[in-house]
Length: 237
Picture (tube, rainbow, N blue to C red):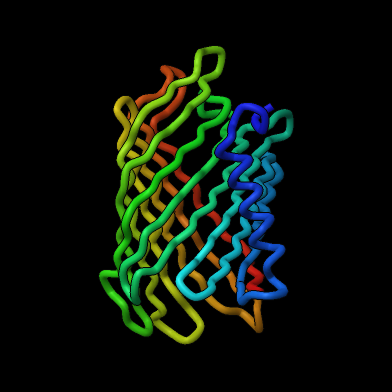
């Protein structure tokens, strides 16, 4: 259903397929992570967290695709279900500045909407560029489409502001912060992902992450802030 109604998602999936198909000819890297938490006794719950990402870089171009999924259930029902896809292309002018295009799709069963897509174009700059520490800041205009549950869709222009910090404080451990804000004419959405990653052995690592999402305008029955703490195993390739 959403493939028929969301051109942005079709473009995203198509670009992701081209990215993976190019692996035999061009340098690329990626990671996949999975975390499962199950409790029993007085409370029986199961939470599954999955994430995958791939980066392809060639000359002045850098392409990134990400997938994120979360499913939480108790003994009788599903209590949380969220899926997100994003694709981003950067054109590097030099070692620090770049232009970017971004498209994302989100489906959250318990957030009061069927799906949300957003697109942005803008300029980015690497404010800090060191061997063990980098900081990228970016901004630009965009648009967002939200299909509310049992209501007409909402379309609005927005301003996008983002930042990404990566600190490799030891040969086997790093701290990252990924922050993005979409300032719309009706709704402002802010997402923050803070993660601590430690290498275990070879390509296997452990990650502790904290995610926070704030939406300024939500239905009366929905909270405006979601948080998520996860411990996952990460395989890099």
